Length: 333
Ligand code: AHM
Ligand code: MG
Image (cartoon, rainbow, N blue to C red; front, top):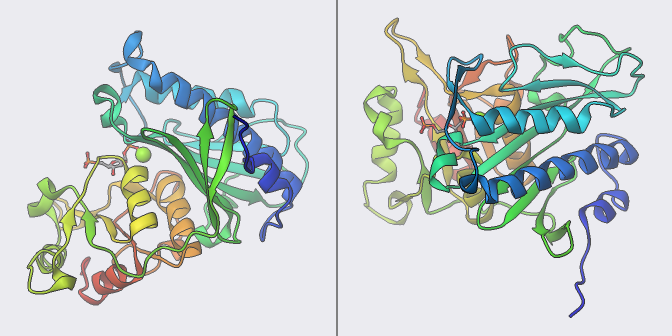
């Protein structure tokens, strides 16, 4: 039986992208496709070898590093090692930006990524993800990162790969959101859905409810409201996988909300968990491109100015109705 359809590479090459040259986008997405295939293949077999568990080290975030966190980061570094036009890599797993290709000329790009999202799921055969953000570097290539430390509105493209029962790649280059499924028989990502629109309201919410007592009182009231079962708009199902990419994917396709509220610190402030530059900003760009919203509880995530590469923020992302309600209820004070 013949296999028909549009490959990711054909789709990118024949479609106008809103924010960057389509030949640059093709080059970058070809490398990300390569990364996605390598990681997808390795995850499928990770329980057969010695790939699970911890390395015994901690990363820049102070979190214990899993072997697959380190390996997936290396897959990214390998993929972009000699690759014009990408000159800089910023990763959840690296304290500093890595600057490649000293001869890199404008236009050059930075890729900011979380190579393995949801890494608590590695040892239980759960869903995992890879999240990426693409930014244009300004001027000549340099090791300064001031041009990278800019709000999410400066992203030229963003996306994620979800490793579930199947592997899917979702991306936007500022002209809508498209989803591709990895066809292992063909060794290519094939177009599945084009111009995705997130439903304006959903029936599920995703949160680590075990942290409930640590949230701001208004965030607790918001969650209580969502689950008070007075009517249809207060009767949500809880769906939480422990992988942002998987929980966001449900919101993208079926509507609803993913939230990771700030947790109260002993100093009386609240602190987000998820990282702004390579987790929240790219997902926010996708949400907005699909007609959804992304907020830190006080305002648009896309407009938050990062202070450093690994800044964290609270997040409320998904259908417009739920994100707007969270802001109205002043979930972060
Ligand atoms: P990671 O990139 O280290 O895996 O952290 C991000 C993950 C998200 O995928 C997920 O939604 C969240 O952290 C889970 O955190 P928790 O275990 O606190 O619920
Ligand atoms: Mg992550």
